[in-house]
Length: 346
Image 1 (cartoon, rainbow, N blue to C red):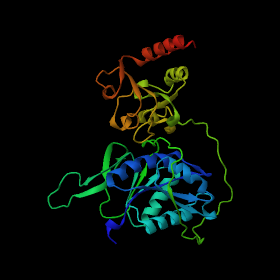
Image 2: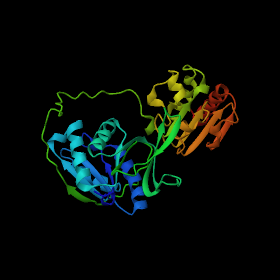
Image 3: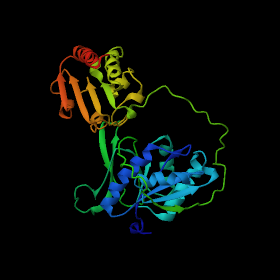
């Protein structure tokens, strides 16, 4: 089968407990951009049980078509029935590009499906674009056009790799949550709905779910914060994060950190921003004691306002900051906190 038979940009519209996960809307937003470059449309693949009521929401966020596989076997996520369903959709409708969120579910589903449809998968992508591959013309090698160029951190986040899949279809990627931006919701927008069910024959790979226990975590999601006070190695110690927490409390924000902080055991990885952490887009981002390595900047450069505090005036973080303060954070941050308390009447 020729590669030219594969058309369209598809996304896996993850739902849990019959609620669309935010990553689905982020994927639609990026898919619309890719589809525009390719002159095609965007299809969301919705798998689950009694999920047809979610179609309109996907349409209002930009999906042109929604393929629905609705079956009792898909009530709760299990690898085998979900992989069977998504692989069947790919084999039947032949998308050129298939995007899956790099969530706990997506990291399990994506590689399983890519193996079944005999294509490659680039995991945990942070940038997706249409372009030529190889990136630069190489003597004796054909340069293919309109390829999906998938960029992701490599070697533990110490470098960034751009990967393509020029000889197989679909081109598949899992995409880190929070990296792509969803489109504004367009109330009343409709999509073409396609009901498809490949049939399910339970086998010894169908695990039986005996009980579902939902743990209530105490860790707040930094991706939801409007204001982040982020600390790096320059903060000096776990105890020194108390002054960052006080500033965050005054502003109604949250504390986050760089990779070095996690490696030193000062904060949990849930609070890490960067290529190997989370991608955030707060209204205000304080980078305190953070040098500004490319791996960290990639996770916060889309913040509306970036304020850097660092004693090194040549720190790379000042290249991306909107406002910069050069000096000792142990003096500057408490003074800033006190001034804000006085201004805000706290």
